[in-house]
Length: 393
Image (cartoon, rainbow, N blue to C red; front, top):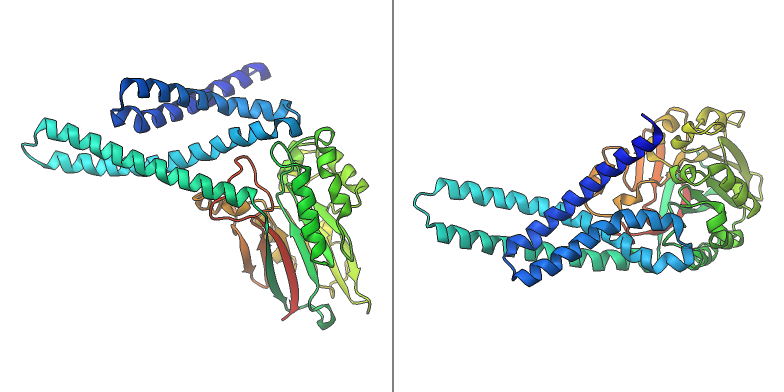
């Protein structure tokens, strides 16, 4: 199939899906509530416009200047999260409708007028509950995503950590997603927060950007001000491979970040005691020539007596890390689910959604993310700058 034809087929499927979802929202929250005709027409037009805004959102995110377009895109992207919650809650409401229909079918001699009135009352009750819940979710989610990022302190005991490295600190940033709705001001705030923690290492575990260097050069510039005793280290996430990974690796290097591409470095304290820090490309890199995760290469020729911390974007890379004796893996990718109840679906792909877990003797810490992707909303998964303190077990 020619590329152009394939694109239009894909676009048609997406538009059909978006249209169907928005018609369902209209049917359940407008038509079935038996509102006055004028209200039905007005709200129907609004729902149609919101449906059209979804493909428009992705088009504008690629064409608008990130600074000028940010206020508009914040609103448009928010609707993506809102319609997700509407779908989830309306699906639950459908189960209530089915239960009511089953009950009605078991009853004899029900007055048709009573049944019709009862169905309208139920539709209004369910519709009102859905609207109130989604409204509450949106307010709470926006405050969580757009408010000040919390510092999360985590102490991790490692059996092989020498006593004179007890207290070694790593500040982890992950999934910042600098791009259409996250810009320079947010990065300046994050840099100030990191620097206040006086870390031994700053580790950025992928999905730093959503866009090319040409559009985001000014937004990422404050990263050059990050300070840590042993420096700032970065590994790619899947979104770097949607944004020109090679160009970003080069540009971040110019800002003073050390990009770990299937390699490791040995970090020594004043007494000369070493800890190895390794990093691998994201799994998405396997589709790009010259990129791709290679843990064997990352650990090659290192002193096996040194404890090793691995930076790997996706938690599912922990299986191989545990097999190769890595002491600690730091990951992101999941956003902690970002929008409840998305955590359920994340768990189907990744072994850990958020927080600290253990695979045999290997610890893995999964950040909920420092920014957000898509909707400027977070529910049940607050953003974090993670202060990791290594302890001798």
